[in-house]
Structures are given as structure tokens and as C-alpha cells.
Image (cartoon, rainbow, N blue to C red; front, side, top):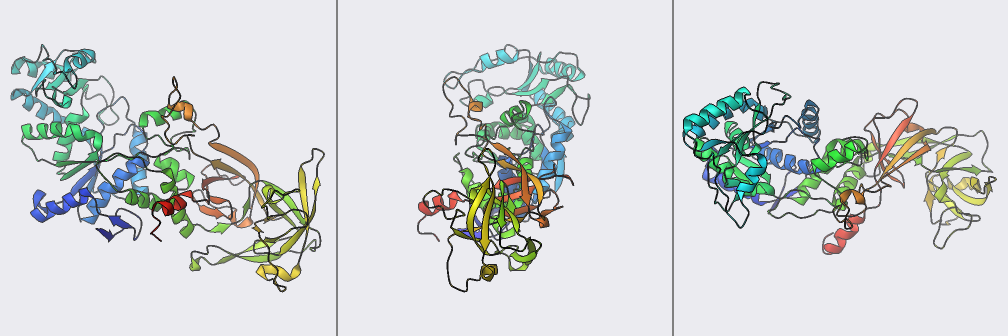
Amino acid sequence: MAEENGNNGGAGEPRPSNFIRDIILRDLETGKHGGRVHTRFPPEPNGYLHIGHAKSICLNFGLAREFGGKCNLRFDDTNPCKEEVEYVESIQTDVRWLGFEWDGLYYASDYFEQLCEWAKLLIRTGKAYVCDLSADEVRQYRGTLTEPGRESPYRNRSVEENLDLFERMRSGEFPDGSRTLRAKIDMASPNLNLRDPVMYRILHASHHRTGDKWCIYPTYDYAHGQSDSIEGITHSICTLEFEDHRPLYDWFIRELGIHAPQQIEFDRLNLTYTVLSKRRLLRLVETGFVRGWDDPRMPTLSGMRRRGYTPEAIRTFCSRIGVSKTNGIVELGLLEHCLREELNRRAPRVMAVLRPVKLVIDNYPEDQVEQMEAVNNPEDPDAGTRLVPFTRELWIESDDFRETPPKGYYRLYPGNEVRLRYGYIVRCTGCVKDAQGNVVEVHCIYDPQTRGGNTPDGRKVKATIHWVSVPHAFEAEVRLYDNLFVKPDPDDAEPGKDWTSNLNPNSLEVLTGCRMEPSLKGAPPGSRFQFERLGYFCVDPDTAPEKMVFNRTVGLRDTWAKVEKKLNPGQA
């Protein structure tokens, strides 16, 4: 079953049904949760959001929007050592940029007092105890997948002693790591998460919101379900690694006797040529391989935004990959295909020359300037046209001339004709070289009867090349970005090496002295264009009035479309 609905994807993007939607539909039919749909997106503010988070954002906000429900943005800020206000602010920016607005903005730290009271309730009912084992000892006592764990020697402390110790933990009497509060469940459970998990640990660290008020902090497993419950969440949607944690999620809620959200797990996004671990992304930033979290090579939403991605393309991608109960790997080519589709519809066409060489039209009047009418976007009739100045001297791509052409080369070479985009047919007569043998000028003659595509004699040429006027063009810097890794699976490293050995040393090439048509002058950061014949580019924030900087977003070549056609030959 599929419907036309743009809530999870781009406008009008067909959204396939999935098992989570089916669960919600059944719940609405039966009146479960009182007919409500209330989801949440709960990131930890310890890094910038990436394309994997976009899948969860689109799913949680999209389902709430589709069914007339609500979706909260809640920060899981239970680890003060790694969390920063910078990340909180960037996450809000990214969620809004993707096109979503939360119904409530919350923090797990909003609930620290309530969580602490519930912890004491579990102590009083004999369901939690203070443990003096070190972290290493806790791991040793936990057992393995094939062997049961051993009970802590502190497991049977009295309620009074546990309450006293827990209060003293909160008051700051004990050093970091000296004690924890653990749930008393089952050390022989086949699910390791139920073997007396830690609920609180001692951390004398300042929190970005609560300052030094607390020195004990709840673990994610303890805080998450109760936070969902407090907010009235109906469907707690998370990735598959939390499936084994669901019994613990349910145990806390059941023992506390509070509102019970329904946890549902789905597959996390894995993308070729990409790492989506915050720890690994942080390492790339800290080692200087990239220029920051918003480096256009990064899979962070801020990096993708800087590179020129649109939120519509990302939403479309997330809709097309869908959700399932099985982790798989998605081809980066599909993401780029969605981006090209979107930019092809929206991006104005312009002419830019990245590796310029001068073309001189010897029989063209020296002082003449013609204004050639150029189409802004053939996919959008309302985009109109613009005028581009044409003169005797033009810049063309150095690759568009060969003194000795290889077989199948149809562009400029001595004696050959090409059409200049929106201009005339020209015939190459030769070239001028410098002392080192480099071509510095290409010479040609033009046919005045062939302006704008006219060919009175019916002759055909096999190539059309782009250009910009020498006296009217301006110089700019262009940054050519490529995949961050040289292998589809960055973990596919040689023995003794790790994933960093597969980093692409040529993931960025910076070109200076590129020539741009004058209409691009002053385009604001974030503006997106198609450089004809070259690809899609956007204006980088580094742009200044005296020097514009463009990033290559994606090339024109779309290999995914060819792959998709082979995989689905019956589809148009």
C-alpha cells in the first residue's frame, strides 16, 4: 500500500507503508492510548546531528504530522561530561532546517528531581540498591551470554541503609565511581540488560543547564522511559540496538506504575562511503582531517547544508529508504540521486569556467559586446531568461581543447567546429603556447550566421561548450568535494589498520582563479546553482565581497539512475 502524502518526504513524494505506520493505524482503530499519537525525537547533545538522525527526525515528526498528533524535541542530557550548549543550539537549527517544528521542547534534566524521587520509591519497594562495586567489578559480576551473572555482595542491604547511602551520594559525600544505584532484577536473566543495571552513577561534573546542583546522574536506560512517560508519549520509536533494552524500559515503568509508552524499534541508517558514529566524527574534527562539524565532506546536517543539500532532498531520501526491522546498507548514490532530482528542478543554470584557458575569436569585432539570451532553468518555465555578455575573448575550460585529440573527442581541436552555448559555431584554427609548452590561447573564427542555434546551411556539430566573457567575468574560488572514504565500507581496512586508513586524501581540491559569469556576482551564501556541464554548486559562507567561494554539491553524472534501471528494468 502506498499513498500520496508529503509528510515524510518531499512534496507529493509517494510514501510507502511500513510496519510502524501499520502499528499506529491498528492502535487508532482499537483506541489504544486514547486515540492519541505522540512521538518524540530525543538526541543527546554531545555532537552535531547527521544524516542518520534525519531518518529518525523525518519518521517521528512525519508520523505525528500525518496522524494529527504531536512530536516533542527532548534532549537526553544525562551525561554532563560530553554535552554542550553549542550542540543543543545546533540540533534545534537542524530540526527546523529539515522542515519540522516541535510541539514541546524538553530536557531529561527537567525531570532530575522526579527521577530521583522514583529511584527512592524503587529502593523502598526493594527494587533498587546502592552497590559499592567498581565499574570493572560490575562487568565481572555480570556474566556472559552463556553464563549467568553473580549477585553483588551489596545486593541485600536494608532499605534504610540504601536510602541513607543514596541520599549521601546525592549530597556529594562520595567520590566519582565509588558507588552506583542499581535496579534489583535478575542476575540470571538471559537478557544482560536485566542483570541489575545501573540507574545512577556519581559524577562531580557541571551540567550545561543545572550547573553544580547534581553530582549523581541517571543513566539513559533509567531516564529514557520515565521521560517518555512524563511527557505522555504514546509511541517511543528508536533504533534496533535498543530492542534488547525494551524489557528494561517496560520493567521500570511497570514497577513505578506510571503511563506506559510503546517502544518500537526500526533499522538505523548505514550509508556507503560514510561513518555515522558521533565518536568517529568527533575524531575527524579533533584530528583536523576535516575543518569542523560543518565541513561539507561531513555527513552532519550542518555539513550537508553547507555543501548545498536541500532539506527537501533529504526528506525525499528518508521517505524512499523507508523503515524495516533489519539493518542494511544504503547506497550513497541514492542520496545523491534524490539531491540531483531536487536541484534539477530548482537550481538556476549559469556558466562558470573552473580551469580557464582563453579563446580568441579572430574575426569577431574587437570592441563588440552582444547580450546572449540564456535560459535560467529548462525544467521551470517560470524561471525566465537572463542576458550573458559575449565578446571577442572568452574563457573556456582547458579540457575543451586538445591540440592532438584522442579518438571520440568532439570538442575544440585544429580544424574542428563546436557550438558556443547560446552563441555561435566556431572553428578552431590553432593555439598559442608559453615557453613551457602550456596552451595559453586557443584561436578560432566564428560564423555570424549561426547565432543562437541558427544553421542556415543545415550543418551539424557534435559538441557544445560553455564559456564566459573575459572582460565581464570575475574570479572565484571553487572547492571540489569528493567522498570522505575511498571504500564503500570504511571498516574494510588492511590487517593492523583501522577505518581511518580508508580516508580519501583527495576528498577536497581547491581551485583558484576560476571565472564566473557576471550574474553570479554577489549571490548570498547558501545560493545553489547548476554550473552548466559541470555540476551543482552553492555559495559557501566563507564568501566575502572581494572573493566569492563556491562548493561543489554534486556532479551532473547520475550513476544511481543507471543502477536503478538495471535493478528495475520494468519501471519507467
